[in-house]
Image 1 (cartoon, rainbow, N blue to C red):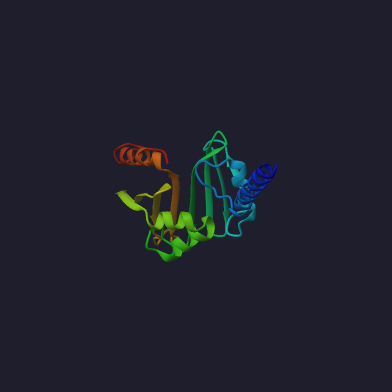
Image 2 (spheres, rainbow, N blue to C red):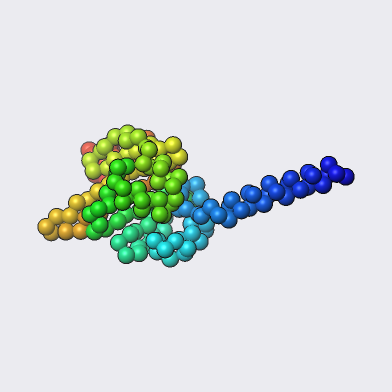
Length: 182
């Protein structure tokens, strides 16, 4: 009887710790997550748009709040990639050494993703795109500098599963010599 009570108590403690961990861990729009979790998460993040629109042609949820745009691509209700872009903010360039960009990633996704990007290894640059391999995810960055005709700059970061990094690199290489729809 005492063994059974100890076992039940231990199970309750373990389940409680797991429950608290899930309750305190904020949802993120990361590859592999269910889109419903993501839609709930954006409602609670002060930096992100509270509601995302769905583009049927692109299978992408998207929304803008101030100068930040969030794009979440899904495949059968599971996030396959996620991206953010910042318009008109010259201090933010998604590079590993740009403190404002890493802080923005931290504020949106938390320290694990910010540190994964910060410590990621740059694999290759193709045109204006930089490809990085982190421990958890791969990252693709793109910066568009403002011009006299279009003075607004744009910096974008896309998060993809590690196993799709080479596919994305191959696609970018192909588009260097062929006409591709973006």
